[in-house]
Amino acid sequence: MQLNYSIEGGDFTNAGNASSQVKKILKKLNVDPKITRRVVVALYEAEVNVAAHAYRGEIIVDINTERIRVVLKDEGPGIESIENAMTEGFSTASAEVRQMGFGAGMGLPNINKNADELNIKSDVGVGTELEIITKLK
Amino acid sequence: MDERFFFHALKVNEDICIGCSHCMNACPTEAIRIWNGKANIDDNLCVDCGECERVCPVKAIYVEDNSFDDIYKFKYRVALIPSVFVGQFPENIKASQVYSVMHQIGFTHVYELERAVGVLNDAILEYQDKEGNELPIISSFCPAIVRLVQVKYPSLVDNILKLVTPSDFAAAFYKKKLIDEGIPEEDIGLFYITPCAAKIAAIKSPVGAKKSLVDGVINLNKLFNKVYREIKNGNTNSSIIPEPTVTHAYKLRWSLTHGEASRVKGRTIAVDGIANVMEFLEIIENEEVSGIDYLECRACKEGCAGGILNKENRFLVVERLKKRIERNSEKKRKIISSGIAKYKSYLEKEMKVGEIEPRSMMMLDTDMHTAMLKMEESERIQHRLPGIDCGACGAPTCRALSEDIVKGDATLSHCVFVQKVLMKKGEINMDTAFSIIDKIWGEKIVRGTIIKRKK
Image (cartoon, rainbow over all chains, first blue to last red; front, side, top):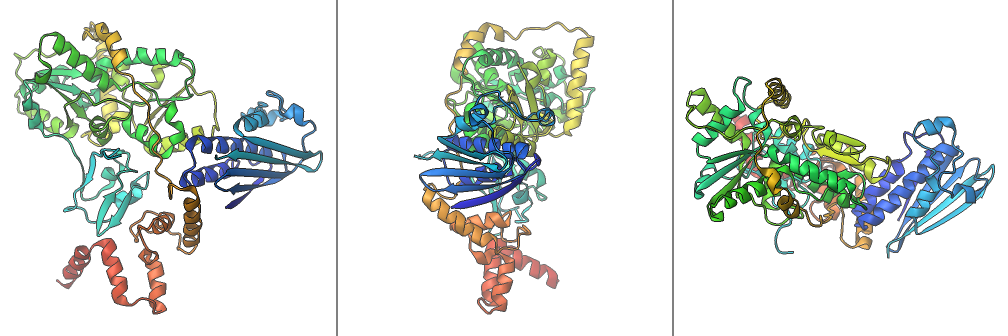
């Protein structure tokens, strides 16, 4: 089954809606609580990333009995160096965003930690596509 | 598993229940349905928080407690009272007076269980120092919260503090103390005076622990009435010298909001009220915040002072406990030890909690593939329901009805709006519609209303 969500850049208020919805659904599907938590934590982190850096984004969550595949496509500045972005503590977030408690440079590393597979495609000036795969078996 | 996983203290008296659905709408875990004109509580979903009891207009929801006379099965009858019990009485009645009346009405020993808080507090601080704790540690104090986590937030079960509650510490201590004084174990009856339903359930079927040491649970409200009547009638026997009462301020405050959070290490947060707790646990589960070390959660607002079996208003109970603390400090009362410190190492060994199992009850089916099909079907149904959550179908929301339908517990025609459409189309006739309504609201009630109107 497939679920679609959208997210606006700068809208931290609603960043987290998709992960909350997905959490409810995975609980109803009897997915192991520990796996559910990993999916939700990674997705929440990714949602906040879109709100922090991009102009807008869409989220596709594809669920089958083998794995949960989350894709976040955004229109935004893109990531200049994926290697840097994957380093704990590295952040390009503005002071404003940091003041809100975000931008500690843990976003991508934390997503990576909670995913079985993480694929990042990014075009500077165009946008970023994140694919987060969590295996169920 | 043969034995029922959850014992429940909250019951519906079907003779009184009018199937009005107030409880159904108040239940935080959507455990209640109205069927045959009566409220039905799903044993697997109920966490014994007591919200249903608060809103029942006819007092049909009651708690299953022990009868007071059960204490006479034992030669030595110990009352384990929470401090909020003393807080039920008007200010001019002192704790010692309450204690002495407790003796008069039949108890041989009265122990305010907050006296055991010191040992627990030390144990929590040691526990916090251990490596590998899932953070935040979620307090195990409130049994409704422990069950809520098991049922609704199963990924957080490892965060629950694996130490028993002050009442368990108090029970273990007092039993051991009396045995050490030479009293045979079978002669000792421990009775916990409870301010809530969840505590009864926790004692009858403890989570992650061995059998409870407590022999019976007495409803705080009922005992209050018994004791207050004696005091009102001036039947206070001054020859009884009661045990010393609790004097440490932090112990008296422990069961109230912030009581525990203010005594543990690191960044702590105290949340009270089950809806607030659920909102917070969602945040914790998503890891939207980090760096919280200890989370005190209480199902009732104002902590145990807000328990459903309190006679007095929660804010007055809190005020009285605060005044009691002030009086103690003004008089610089000497702290008289209950002797629990000597048993510290014994208690710490005994009072560990085993694994707390997740008990996820939100799923549509145990098989994921089937659950996915059911979810798609339930969404298809939900989009066709009016979405006003009127509750007339006997389920709390349109979404809940759509899930009940795919689980086979209800049918689409339970929805009164769908019925209307079906009747218009001639798909069902008036009689069929009536028989569906009778099934939800109960034939007796429907007939009763008609007869009343005729008069």
